[in-house]
Image 1 (tube, rainbow, N blue to C red):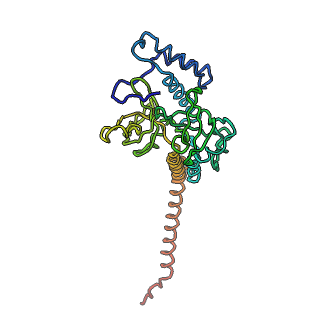
Image 2 (tube, one colour):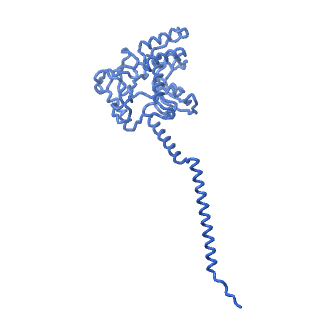
Image 3 (cartoon, rainbow, N blue to C red):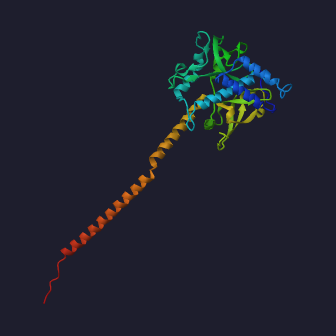
Length: 342
């Protein structure tokens, strides 16, 4: 598999004609991951193109990563309504249940089971979700330290120390790439691609899954956000930038030389534990909208109220004047006339 270089070399990019061809294949497969043979064939074809032959060898994993990213983007857009956040609630109790998922994954597995599990049946699912809501997993390969989607859990075992392991079949890969992985350290709920409106949920200090593009390949690695530069969004979407530090190189380089990179939001996948931030933001927006509705008055209604108040004030003033006049007349009637004397 191999780790991508971090020597500042040019990043790998697919050419426009290659992207067009892969888009067409993805449509033919109804947005599902093509078979391994298709991915290998595309990698070989792209490597033999006149622009790449003898220079860059396109790897199957690069093709796989492209399909996976595009599938996520299409799925995220189809599941979200514009101007409204579509977020699955994750209360504190469920976060605890999600952290305990690793222990339950290591429970007896009666044969190969898909890694896409209905949320209602996953680890303490007290969460209110739709019938079509699924919990997906990702696993960290011991060969290159990158994270990949889990296709199937094939088997399980316990080590001498009592730590559970599972045999993982990565999505889009064959049996040759299967790995035994530690459940507690190398298997977790799948990270979430960020929509443009979700940049507010990415904060300094966060653990994220970041798409690192190297000269030869591009893979997903754990990273931490060091700083966030907020920018005004435009028609292209989120323009914010994030300074990140990749975790997989910390053991190999001095702290001052740990690879850092400024990346856009599209390269970041946030952890599901940050859902609560979007829920809070959504609740705050709804509350502000309700307050505005309560305080705002229709112009015609406001005019009618002003007219009614003016009429009432005029009536009260007229009544006051009448009362004053009556009081004057009464006082005059009560005054005794002086007695005229001859």
